[in-house]
Image (cartoon, rainbow, N blue to C red; front, side, top):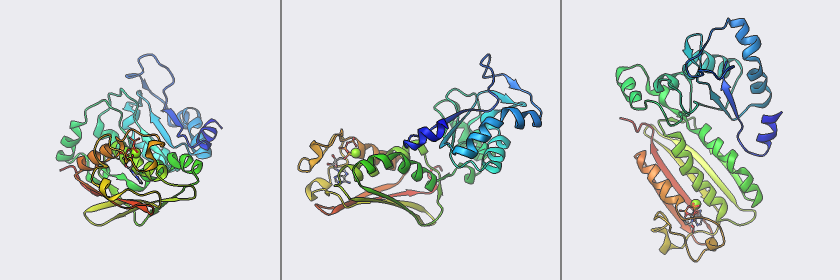
Length: 288
Ligand code: ATP
Ligand code: MG
């Protein structure tokens, strides 16, 4: 009920800590030894009910071990039971200070890694063949869907229609947290610099080398002489109504640097009074 209530307000609920984190003493090293029956009937039951009834958007794994294996590295728990048997659709994240091995956490099905651990060992694991490229790839559509879910209330408030078009399944090696930030700003701009009853269309496409995200709006547009400058830090178009609309002018500078970090490209096209298009192109594999 709590997850349903929170998410009805378009805020992601994070359910934690999955699983068997039933005591706090020595919680990073304690190992919960449990029979399968006790695990399913007692310790996983609450999570099962929650996932099946409320579909939380995010779930966080725990520090402790379950039958000798770290919960965050536990493929059977995450990929097997949670996603496979219960049909969980949301994002799985690690907790902040796990001592888990990053590449094993990726293999087990984590989507987001909190900022501690040994990220450099991921490349090493890739080189050694312990981790495959497929396992590194994130589902681009799932990332975009989560962004739009979060921005939907702002769009509704302004009566701007928000649509996602996805032409084919796309998986790519991306820094999910940074890319979310980048695309979020483009979509938020499309909503902000728009008028009542306007629209923002987000589309996803790919070929064998790149994936493409297009964010298009029918808002106020950007004057031609400003188009070259919008990616500069703190630059905001003066003539537009952006003075009244809150913002720091940093969004597009951040968006551009994230796209470049992924060895991608971003281009803007705009006609004043008609609307704006931002095209983003990112290679499917940017880790070499
Ligand atoms: P922040 O994103 O840091 O909160 P911001 O939205 O003003 O602030 P940017 O995202 O960098 O900053 O955008 C820079 C400027 O470009 C904006 O102030 C606005 O004038 C113009 N702009 C950006 N996107 C659009 C758009 N879709 N339509 C019209 N103008 C836009
Ligand atoms: Mg912005």
